[in-house]
Length: 144
Image 1: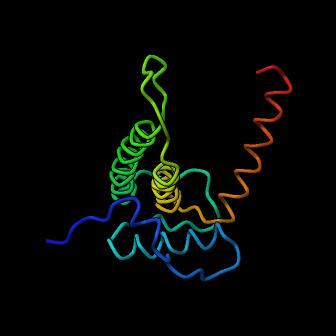
Image 2: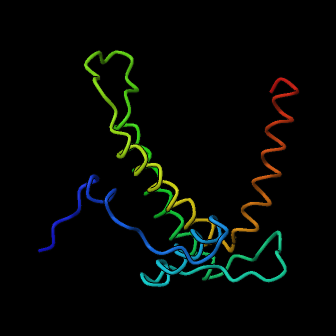
Image 3: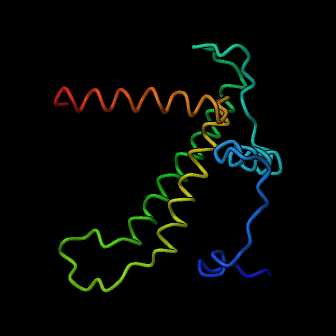
């Protein structure tokens, strides 16, 4: 039986090779390759529709999304476990930054998988991110 790597072992890995200059696009590429390897389906969208009909494919994607969101909840809990977030606990001594960083990346893996499942690519993620950031800035200016 193969033993699972510890966090300190993962930090020492070289990582997969970068295939394109745009870092978000590169991460989407690698995530999509991994999803293809393990058989995760994605929504093929053309022309960027704003609504789609519920179908067997949409139900299957929803099932995969439930798995991803459950994994996100678990990874978020693991991140919290790595942080000194309990104000009543006085015994915190140090924070393992490598572990914190790995948990954040684990969260990002599942967020990226959700985006790809539902037909988003790096360009659309970036476009919507910028619009949402503008909305957040505007909300703060209005005292939200």
